[in-house]
Length: 436
Image 1 (cartoon, rainbow, N blue to C red):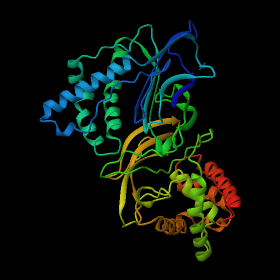
Image 2: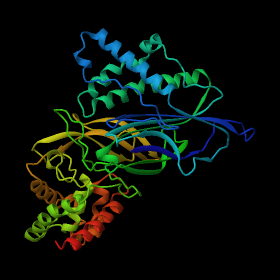
Image 3: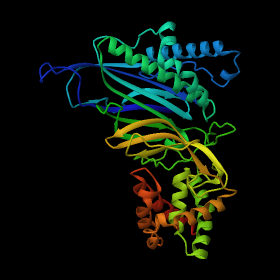
């Protein structure tokens, strides 16, 4: 089973009242979730399971007119999904009020399996009208600037992993734009809009993820949410791939406070038994990095998987000096500005503001590819011996202090050091138990 729930929403400005007078608002909360892989079931308060279009055959349709009609139908279907999405009305909401949803939370999605990917949207609207049934008509969609750019966006999406989800995200962007226009026409105030596109290999490899105090795109609301799930089978899900893409590893760390849920028996120990001895040999032969640090960082970057795209077990991007093969992969990174630039073929998919001066980018980056995990270990050592990490090198025999010293340079996540030290503790315990 798997579910997504909202635990709390804090509203800073309820978009109602003047000079503190009559400052209580009627708030409408709308949410809808698109999931790929894993069959959805309808639970109280959750999003209904609706048939999603497959975008894989779009480019084979005969002529531009047929493709345009396909996208029009998909856009209208997504508008209908929003009309049927979970909805909650709360009266008497004041400024700076936290909306709590009890111990069970506000469920916005439930499924029988842990999905491979999720696209979630949450709308908080100060309104006296029900705006979700805004009944998009075909003429309005066709005439909109948002729809005119949709084909290019979907065409690009079809060249990446999980094309169905990517296509639906592009279509839902048109719906979002048109709904904002509807809100303005109705003089309804948007108190907050939060959107997140997550995939399992990066964000919830074990079906567990907690996030607190996540800012929305307006900066007016904070969202606490939880993803939780477990599987009856220990079989590992297979990421959706195409000829040009592969399963993802990322430099972003998931600092979840929840423990992993029903992990594969012996998976962590098996990973440590394979990586730690190789890291130990490299450490002894080259006065290199402490094997506890190396093993923990590899586990963190891969989610305890030896089999990764291009045998890259450290999430190392191409960089200026690399002349070997690469894989173009989707990943997420945290930056302090909303205008970070990337050189083609790397490109930005979306940007989500998490806090002032903190933005989460979903991007395509080029990652190094190796012939074997051992080659990845050797290149990792060569990289960390370089001038970029020279200040940390004297601490290489102390795995925890070394982790703290390199964290700010190696990864963009502000929680990387804390998470990596916790992983070192876990690896050390297993090494002692296994007597490696």
